[in-house]
Image (tube, rainbow, N blue to C red; front, side):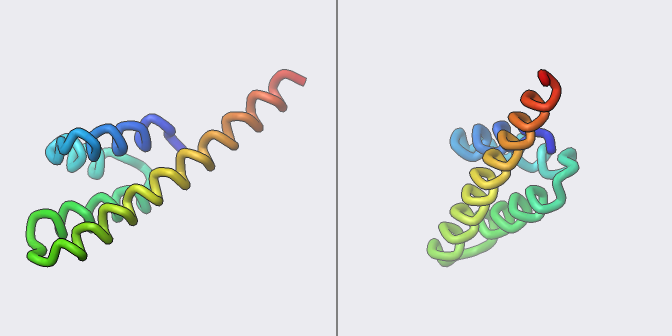
Length: 84
């Protein structure tokens, strides 16, 4: 996993930089992240019901949080095993 992808996704979402978020969606190797970004951007651009947009946004943010934690755990395991 590339932790910088999750940090960028969070930053772009926070700053409402949808063009950069779209570019990240295409370039990331994490297919789940790409799908969550796609669902959010589609809802943001075409959905009239704000509840759906909010649901997609929270889904994206929850995934970013989960993936960041998992990537952090992988980093810690590598650091600990590499130093022994």
